[in-house]
Image 1 (tube, one colour):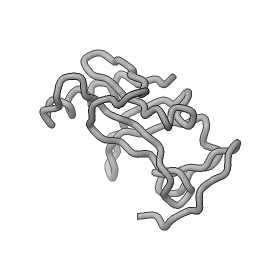
Image 2 (cartoon, one colour):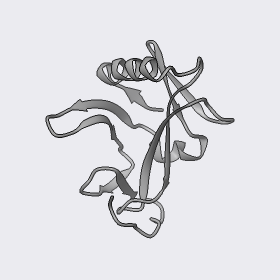
Image 3 (spheres, helix red, strand yellow):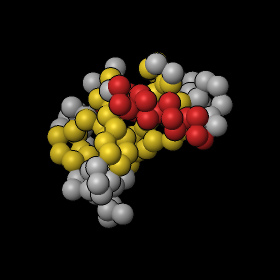
Length: 119
């Protein structure tokens, strides 16, 4: 389904500990209409919902929302710590085009929702 780099797994463990996440919760990843390219990633610390896919990584878990699995199939999650920006990054093979700010994308094989302004 998806892969998580060692660096991202380590940062996720740290984040879950710092937030005092409840047992069973993890980084829940979903795709929702929005952003300037039509689809945007939504990440939150949450428990899995019915139908979600759970990807276990050492000491943590990534939860893929059931309604987003198709748009996230084959993704790679990494953690970047650049001088001017840090955070989880998604390398999505399903994205035909990404926006300039890197938070939204469009797919090649399905209609793209009407874009919104970048924030």
